[in-house]
Length: 353
Length: 248
Image 1 (cartoon, rainbow over the protein chains, first blue to last red):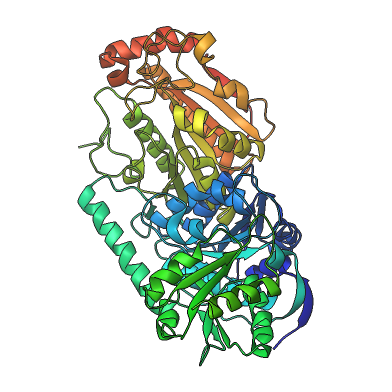
Image 2 (image 1 turned 135 degrees about the horizontal axis):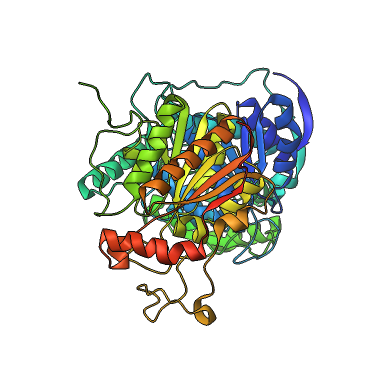
């Protein structure tokens, strides 16, 4: 392994992107992720890359469209209200099958909401916040180390499938400083982007990037092709951590920083004689359905703990498919659940039957 | 036998879908002739808009990207920053550029992006069937101004060349017209110069082309050309606003 540094989550995202070969960043300032832009503004000129502070989130995501279509590894980042503005571009990028990476350091909503951590954009990310039948790969790191590794991986996934890949964190993860150990060399997949608009040089037919297909038969075919790609990603790209699940009385589902709180709760519960397991989806899409199926005979129940009004819990219910009850506990507005409050909820469920 | 007139190489040999009398086809040809004459087809990447010309990527032989409504200058920015040695142009209508895409065009010009914009102003939304455009004239009847455009209700026509001329990053700004042969030849000169300005790395260049929409204006092609001359030119004076003497 290479150098070990103490770094802020947001800066690690930018550093990881540079290490992954990203030389184009387009963004617009919004709390709590702006350090990503600061880092790129400083580093891009040193490596001959492009940093543009765009006039809006909408312009930034469309610059991503252009750069991705031109064959570059490209990224943008924002936080919830800004991600809403980018939805038009997200849909177009998905329709045109362009590889790119987008970061959402989620803050609380709705509306301007607040700047504190939340997970209230789960639906928007995994169910499609923009129009049309499309999917993004959504990665949910829970530590600064994982932010680094998953950001590098996001570029590989994007290139491998020609798909938009989202890193979804929250204000805690973005603002937190932790040690991160960088590799000496990244594993970067090389793909031939022979579809990109790089100029024909009069040596080939022209390449065109588009998301419009006026002929309904052609458009349905295009949609079926997208869906086939999504099924392939569901087969190959699921990432999940299962922790303490063998022989557990109850299994908690949590992602990102909440999963870290739950790991402490597991220790507390152990002392009270309750065995709690954790299923931590690392890919929110594709959702780790098989992990839930595997443990669907857990004696008591499932509990989804989230920083929202109950979003991932719907996917947990779909995965558990009625075999066990699925409960929910959430906090909103930038409030975090305490370990005791989660433990109390677990005890209430375990004793409740 | 000597060939005196042929399809420019940069224009693909496919039928166009435009209405009879529409001048988009002529403007496409002028761009293609310029790409041929400057020998830049192989290093040019164009950006198609939303509107009647949404699929003009099928008509040009150079690489093309299709952009969301109004976002072509942002898409072109992304392309140009990845390939600074290539030639990048956008083709946009008045709804695309002067309404929904106002921020993108103003800021691409502000940054002095080394791209060229061909801005086609026909004072109406064509594809969505004749609604008011930002450039619709006072008293002009459209499907969303059935009693005519009234300043007190709908505001005034926007003059894009005059507006962008105030920006330092916009170095070549010219308005031309499609209403007769002489003006079509002038338009080609302006388009050529706009591309040359980009190649010379001077900054942002734009050519506004006054154009017709016989279908939605409810006029014959001939009447439409006359209407353009008599009504649009007084509101949108022709000529160079900036960069006439730029050395390229």
